[in-house]
Image (tube, rainbow, N blue to C red):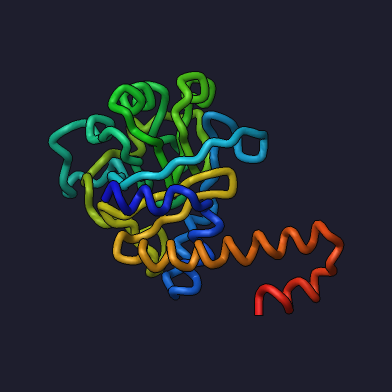
Length: 220
């Protein structure tokens, strides 16, 4: 896995997403609606990027008393260099992650946290420098609204786009993308070829080529 992550590291989320589209992976692996909140808010400067193997957390409605319960607190499931992905039930207006969980994640060496849902304690998390991507924030905590159910199980982002244990997440200023290990070699090959083309096209545009002729010359 370390070699796969090393191979993907030079590329941005946009590069990887485009490659996955060409490979017909659902939605290009793009986790739409999830943006960077820490250490800075997306679009407010900074150059934070994260990459790592995923640790999944499936949250459920707190009223569900029949689904499994994890043996440990989900924050203790963080692993050094990995990215925790938390799947909150759709439509929840409460947070499922906050400053205390962020502190535990930071101590355990997590590369970052990605939440399909809400979190709180923005300032605390930004001050500790924990990279965090989420759909939204909330003032309300997890208690009475949601609870963790399963760790390191496949979770559905939408339709046929799933996030599986051992998938690789990449997050940066443009957003978050998920890449299955089985496609990394093909993604890297496509990204390398595309980067060479884009570099030559950029130089041409900087020299005054119009977009149409540059596209015809380098993209066809």
